Image (cartoon, rainbow, N blue to C red):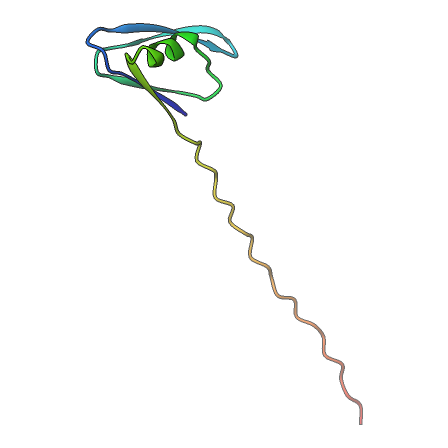
Amino acid sequence: MKIFKNTSMQGLSIPFGTPEGVKTVFVGPKKQIEVPNNWKSKVVENLVHRRMGKLTIVPDPQPKIVPTPVKKRKTKTPVESE
């Protein structure tokens, strides 16, 4: 996830390039938005360079893989004959 925080005193309308097409998001003054990592925006990079916003990239949480319990098999013991 990407978190963009608007540090300016004005609202910003930011276009993001998504796999479905361009989506525009409004960010109010001193507010922040979260977008997926695959959304790209030159406007955000420009605003960060001009110090009008901050961009934080948070790694997506990895799903926990729970190992399946292994069932113990009962082995047949050989019967001793007398």
